[in-house]
Length: 459
Image (tube, rainbow, N blue to C red):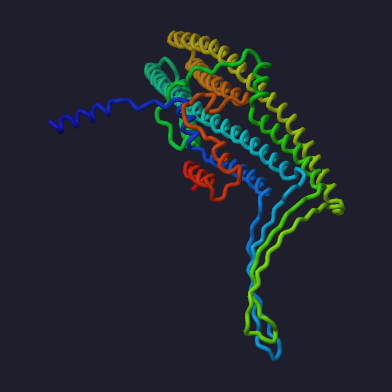
């Protein structure tokens, strides 16, 4: 009985169809699999550490220094001297220079976060492209296989008509040539399918198994101007350029602040062991020392270095402003192109539908006329080829329409896991930043940082 029950369970499992992979599944797999996202997350963590580095400039520096020396005087035994010092130094006030560096580092962190969003959009678009690419390739293969079957029957019909003397050997040769050409096209389509599968594998980490039908097309803004307005507000490249420009503004202020004075404090404690005198080298004495001091300094002349640095910072600010303007224009252009691609694909599909209906009617008519002797085999083959090409064009146009919608979403800055509601846990960039922004060493903050590193697999 147990064997029968087990066999029944295996049979039931075998008959259950494999779960279909949706477009959302493909995007989730790409998001989880992407090494490019991992790379740019590491870039962001490095930018987070720049904030910690800037914060550390306002904290004390503690150093220990151990020294040993030996002196040999002619006729006298070698004398030895050792010392151990503990030194403290700290910038007490630099007239806002360090704070400007901290603020600029924070702006760069925010810019790098937006760069990460841009990478996320590219990963998800690549996933959509791979998904639609596989589906289109599958449909093209199925279409060409069906055409091979139809032409095989046409070729046999031509042979039968030749055998009874209705047509010549030329007609049979034409059917053979068309069948061979279609088989070559089928082989090409099968090759394209394998290439599409490899692209899918690259994006998701697994070969496509059973792709489901694509979901309904995403909703579009009311018009092109509204789409452009959304893009100007939400596209990560524009937001990144804005943050970069803000950091450049702070860079100008920081370069100007380099001319300000700087107040530093120092303190040290130490112990020294040395001979009591050169005449009694064997006798060692210890001496303790301690002290502190304040230093106020300001650069009066640097050979033009400070002025050059200030001018360079202003040039970099102008560069960042121009990059922001240029980036906004490019995004506007990308939105317009994506919008046009949607319109073009829709128009193509409408025209191709009419072409298919006409080609189907022509093909049916030519076949009937050929049976009556009013049309040649070549006419039938040409009509069949026109119908096949129209159906292939419709497959490509439908795939282009679907992909153009996601291209537009990416151009508007909306092609993200959060906006698409893919239901997968997303990377939280603030978690690592919050753990390192105060430059922890071994405190509770450092313990929290260790937990963050373990959570993202970077321990």
